[in-house]
Image (cartoon, rainbow, N blue to C red; front, side):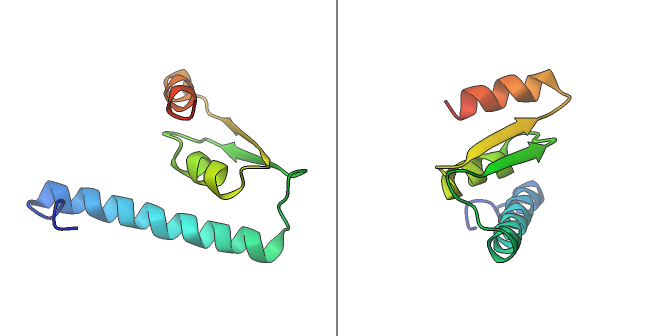
Length: 84
């Protein structure tokens, strides 16, 4: 946190990242409680944007088939290169 909180812009960036982390943990907790995920599972991330959730799902469930769709082709190219 110390690296981020040198100014208000850095603090807002830190808050955004913290919210993403909390939201992802809650989402994974929800999935774990309500559905078994194994190598036969398929997960679809609709509107994946920069791929933060998609990347977290790939790490958390490496044996599953994980797909993402987004209307913005720029995101598609970015995320494809990010997770190769």
